Image (cartoon, rainbow over all chains, first blue to last red; front, side, top):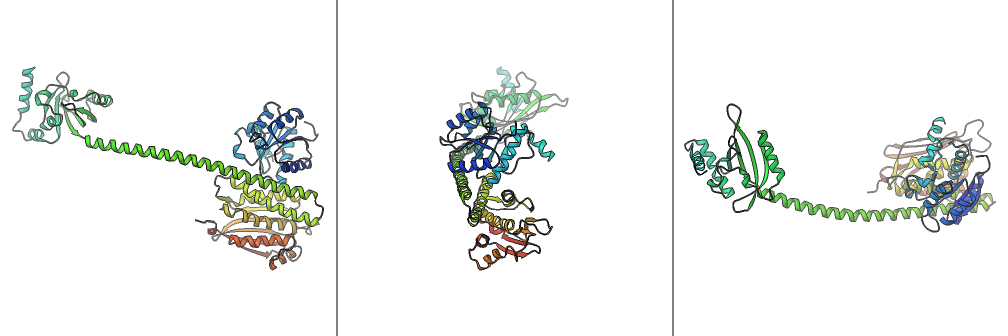
Length: 154
Length: 383
């Protein structure tokens, strides 16, 4: 991946959260390509817009469908998704193919550092170190990005 | 056959003058002797107690293998263990369901042991029978009672498990809503702060945002742990410091953490978190002017320890000290009035310390300021 800004899709049914999140995404140098509020919207936007990263809440306008959205983004669109949810305990062990989760309530700083960290991971295919506080990585992506190796090197 | 039986009847009479034989004949415990050297190991002696127990006449038992006592409900496994012992020439003790002549049953605690001759060959088997029907019945009743109890306990456990599952689901739902709403409040404050240009208003909004974030961090931490009733203060402080330092963008300030793990009751988590947040924020905002500290490296140290039945939380900076930048804050604290940002923060600290039954003391650390909060350990354990 080159150094162009990361294309981010926001999947969140709370419009105020989404609006603020969009500011944060832009602040860390990413580019918001869209905002979906339901699972149908999310899947079709992921399909059409090919975002580098989808930020997905578990609870959407049509119910707790975020997990399925993440699975379809991963399986059908080959995209990388990140959960942003207060429902950490509802996530499946394999994170439905998501690269990780940011627990709500998150802080501005937590989201900023997580997005910067993931930008590096996605661009270089390798983690720059252990994940920052507030970001939990899925086991599959920890292995993919060699987080243990990176943590030792730091 | 007839003559053989007569011969055994005679054998029974044999030794009439022998006191040991007399004792066995008259014993209250049923006893038999079988002849191992005859085909099918027949009974050659049975005492009166045996005849009374089984309901048979002596003629009907002598010369027969004692399997005639068994019936349809006798446990084949118990019989098999008896056969194995006889074949191996070993002692055996086994409970058998036996049948009387009239068809009624009794539980027979059978003890059978081989009697060897001088050459070591097995000559006889000696058997004693005890009627343990009452004991068996009591065991059965006790077993029934236990079974019914276990069923009742299982039922109740199922009910309680279901109730607990419902409660847990409800708790998750409420927790989820609390977290989402805290996120919503943060987002509102952040969105407004993006529009405001007045530095005073921005500062006030920033202060409120920090407080909401502190409470949000508490909630994130509270439900992450396995114990929802205890709150890990040190883990909270690590999260809080990371957030605040990240937001402040003051890479010139170093933070040193020296924390023992201490837990407080969940009900104290939010007020304590706010106190720590205010004190840390105060040090971060007021102790260190941007232009530096005449070459001194700026540092904030947070230490948490158990000390004499109290939790001791210390937040120390090596900044400009109370007499300079923090003076307005200290004045605000002394008069108890809600003045500017710093004054309001210290008022919060003062009020929450009252609520927590904690003491807060501020020292001139020369250089800098040191604030020590002492929280009673026992106060955290409400029975």
